[in-house]
Each structure stands twice: as C-alpha cells, then as structure tokens.
Image (cartoon, rainbow, N blue to C red; front, side, top):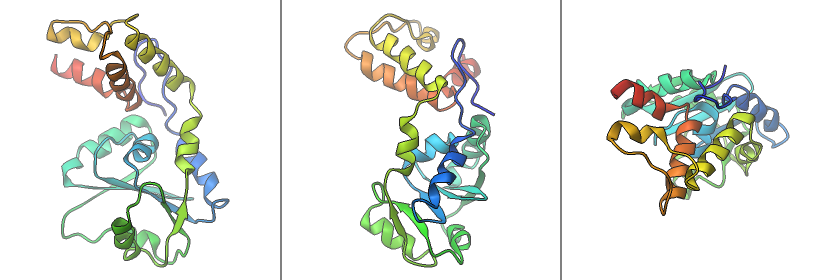
Length: 206
C-alpha cells in the first residue's frame, strides 16, 4: 500500500521503508532498532505525533505512544500503509519495550537523537547495554521515491510563486509566494509527506 496521492502527484511508497531498514540491522550489528527521532518515526510509519518510539526487528514493528494519540496513531499508520502495531501506554503502564527487548543483547539506539538522560532511562528497559547506531534511517531518507520527488518539485514551485496553494482558498485568499515562500513550501511538502492530511482536513472541515 501507499499513502493516498494528491491530485497529479505520484503516491508515496511508505510500505517498503521498514523492510529496507530491516536489511540494515544485522550489518549494523543489531537485532533490533529503537527509533526515537520524531522525523524518522514519521518517515517509517506516517505518525506525526510528538511522543512516539518505534521498535523495529526482523519480524515486527511496534509504535509506542501515549493516550493523546489513541485515535491519531492507528489512523495515520493505516493511512500510510505501514505494517506497524500501535501500543498506547498510560502514565502507570509498563513500557512494552521491556518485553520486546527480552533476550536480545543487541538493541540499537539512534545515537544522534538520544540524550544522555534518555539513554539512561532506556537502559533500564533493555536486557543489556544498547548499541549505538548512526544514520540508518537517515540514509534511507536520502533516496527519494517518485512521490517524494513530485512533492519537492511542487513545493519549490509554490516557494517561487509559480503555483497557488489551494488549501488557503477556504479562508478567502490564495497564497502565491513571496517572503514566506520557503516556509510555506516546507509546510506544504511535509503535509504531503504525512499522507495528505492537510488535504483531508480541508475536505472534512470546509
């Protein structure tokens, strides 16, 4: 599956990203990877919330988030076409990471996005010392699929003022570039990358 495309744009191929990451685990010296970078979680699952960790091993992927995203998380994961289990935990709940990591001695953490205090917290959840990894998901993100290339080109056209961003029309005006062009283009690009959620909001509320 793939995210529903905006009109005239190729679909985003989200479904194969986890498998490409799995192929990198053993060469990186890990049996599983705990993805904590919000950007990387979003890239792999379509989930846009600010609180989420993604466990990835060769057999399964599990997104762990809190009650604020009880509905949003599974909806976004399903819309992105990612094969990911969603687990919602409360303040007093035991983290599922402990059971997922049981018996595994090579669990990788994203060295570039884990603070020292977060590492100490995660060590308590794992069966052994974590393995530092660097750039596994970032390397995947460097290779853009056709859908991403289409959205980058469209966002660039908006930033240059060559195209109008239709989402603003329900508010009574149309954005056509200018000083804020790059910022608006970036917002538009990420809205497409996240499964065309902005387009869905427009249809739902307007």
